[in-house]
Length: 334
Image (cartoon, rainbow, N blue to C red; front, side, top):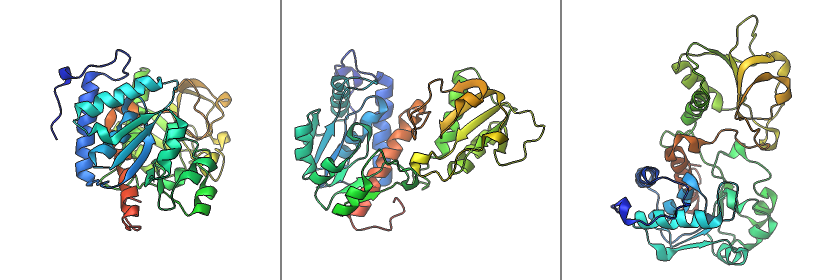
């Protein structure tokens, strides 16, 4: 599929993405759909209409030959529904995608109608919470991809018990699969966020507070950037610690225990809250991000690294749904 020249597209002044980002986004979608061999032929997809790089999900579905794609959106702190809709339509036109298969709406009545014939309902921001009322509209054949790893599940995202009662499968995405490899982006995200506030970690000693599979990936990236990495369960002793990185599983995501703050120095140059339930008042430090994230949510967003990690994760999640619907329940993508 050939992309149209960018100057042929008339953009809304409020479209929250630059032209060069649009080309990067489109090329990332083309590459990942081809690489993962995503094929949604004859499938009906209900997903979100979002701003920024998160606009990609309905575009991925359209490029993968979905029979119909419904993108539901609403006004958020990141932009209005009309902005998100304009961005989606502009990008779909730019990519030469079949607009006749795409419905963009903020009407819940129409959303419920589309749910009745959905094969895939994505667990994405504008559709959350996926509650009892929404699940009741789904056919039993439908599948709900979490759009992240199963162990990251948040109860506030969707009513898992209700889905199980109706026989609707909820599936996670294997983000560690070599073809997906999302976790490698996490360390880079931390480093970029620190550099954005003028902190170069070369030669620093950093404590990594992590109780999940993120640990190995973040440690490797930090060490490759010249850091000494300690873990919170280590004996810190008299080591001069420059900063602390939190990537601990929150309680609402199934975390088994609270962070043991008594092992951590209270005064450090910086603390980075990538993920986890952190008692910020215990530390005299510079916080990254400055605004504390909502419980269970990431403090830093992969979209800060550009479109690639977002497109890769959304494509892999739809691939997991495709595999399950095709009867490949042991697929490595799930």
